[in-house]
Length: 467
Image: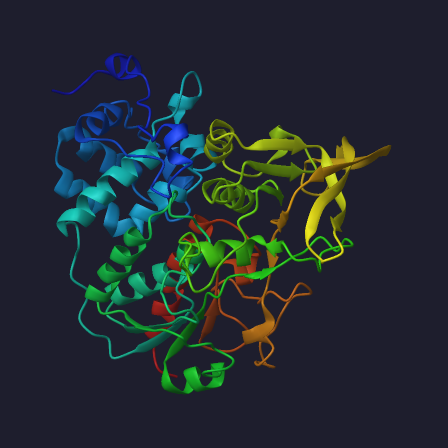
């Protein structure tokens, strides 16, 4: 039965079932539990099937959102899976970590007077249904005879690899770590994105013919010139994984981590297990400096590792925090303490060199800065100390020069990021780049959008007429 617009508007947004906070802070299992078929169908029926679907333009990978949602409402999940996977190589990932509230859902007309359709939750439902059944996959095009090297197996690299393999090209992904997935496996905790899901998405790409070479550090194991000689095109998607520190006294003390190292030790090296060969300090009072998703991941991880108090220290207010609203809400539900409008000035330590506290200065918001957010300004004579034994810096990352420093012909901007033209091609013919190494630290879905666009440009480059 087809519902009328009035009937669709009468359906409230279906909340995502989740682990209770008191339970989930004691485990690393996924917090959100996902829709069942009945909830998914009911939520799908809220979609008004707009003729001018603005939600599509709000999606960096241009998923035909009304189409797959309509198929859920009809109960044709096999067709919904095929439609979704045709547009998105990693839907089980984006359904979990993509900030839909600022992208596709922000464009949903239902959000004008009520709440938008839960596009991300529906994407996750279809992706999980398809993954568990091996459904929705389409065979690749006939072999093109062309070889493409993809450097980095994060979201941008995986997306480009999948799109290129679908077009019939032979793709090899070179990954520096021993496990494929990039930031999806080393940066995002299990309670937000289970590693088995990333493994299964990689396995699906392997069924398309994508080959993975692990422990391959480009700039050390191979040079970019070597890859150019053995491949018809190269896509660089190494991210921006070099952590930034606060440049304050005391950062040399024992108990100070970058969020990058802290999360990598826990997520990729298994430091959540006390028997792990790569351990991590389990502080009783942990302060994470920053207000983005990485900061939320780090502080919530510290809580699960047994911290009696896990604290966010952020120099602006709650409204200015760049983290997803859902992640902030989950952190608050889990008992995370927020110290807002504070800026660290030095890290305190004892005679043995261990962290004992974080000295901060209180701030107030002034005029907007270049980002459009009000600039934090120090309040005189407002210094105070947060007692702690671990401090984690989660204030961002920048381009790692490991690859770029070995390629003198590769043009970089003043921040060390790779410059590309409108085709996403670098200064080296046949070498393309995208994701954080081009745009700076950003989101998973923006990297995937770059990967999808780059695949299109690479395909055109490979199929250009001979000169």
